[in-house]
Image (tube, rainbow, N blue to C red; front, side, top):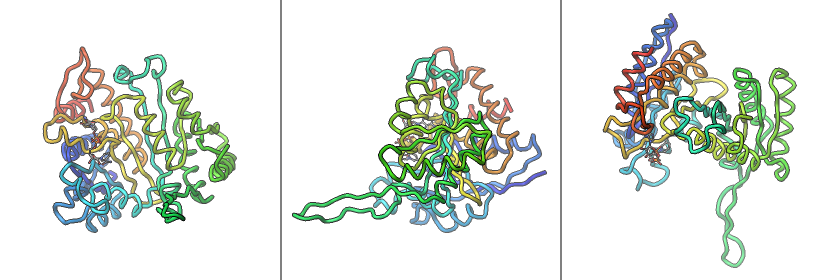
Length: 358
Ligand code: NAD
């Protein structure tokens, strides 16, 4: 019997609805494999601002730091939109990333055969697509110095951001990417702009050097502009993609949208040690909150990533992913995925179907 401590931060909007369903799924799937969990809830985002005045209270952070994994719903909502940027719900995400040292963001984009018509692209282009984007999350142009808006001559100002990567940062994200590719189909494409940027030249050098340690992984390089095109031209050529913070921000959204269904996309953020953070890609969907309309599958699949990448329980992760496929095969959909011939059910019922499939 293995036991794990999970910090549960449901957050705002649809967060609590989808989290309740996903926690029940983890509990049930875990039991089947002899795993038990201690789930401890804590406020984050807008809920935490209302309770304590802070988007990421110290007690919440302490709980995360002393857990085996952090399971997050979503944060944000209209009622907090007028707060200053350092007090907004979304601030909690940055706080968690930096406090937990989460430098690697893993975003799968998988086309499920049952949902192929949800994509805006042609069936033959996207059928069978299964991509993992590994994005560097704590370096690059979002954090490089100098940054700011500086006065120049004649009353003009200049905005500056600096894209910079140290060799150590390149190596650690590279390792996560090679290890991930190894667990998949063994192909890694590193994306950069080495034809123009020195920082990318160092990136390419660092990733190429690492390849010697992973002879079983086939490494290729691609310029970011070409990658943006190839993702919509022939996405099946990609297995695992690794890239820096800015390029990864854009390409992971582009890859995700090949699937056409935001309610299905999970993510994982990992550090070198300590707990990882697992959350759906979508936000708090305030427009449908409290109506039992939300699709809980991205949250449930984030739970599967928690098992696979957070606490190394791939068998239980597989179980959950199989259960999701089975329920989709049975024709059940939440409203966001409604299509002719399917049966539309609510968030809670979707959870019950997944439990039944497990
Ligand atoms: P959103 O992802 O919340 O919603 C976009 C659209 O997708 C909405 O129409 C919504 O109803 C729908 N949608 C999203 N998730 C769904 C689900 N699981 N099931 C069914 N439909 C779903 O993005 P937004 O509207 O731009 O942002 C809303 C709030 O969420 C904002 O406050 C934003 O800052 C915040 N946000 C938080 C995160 C996060 O917590 N990681 C990410 C993005 C946005």
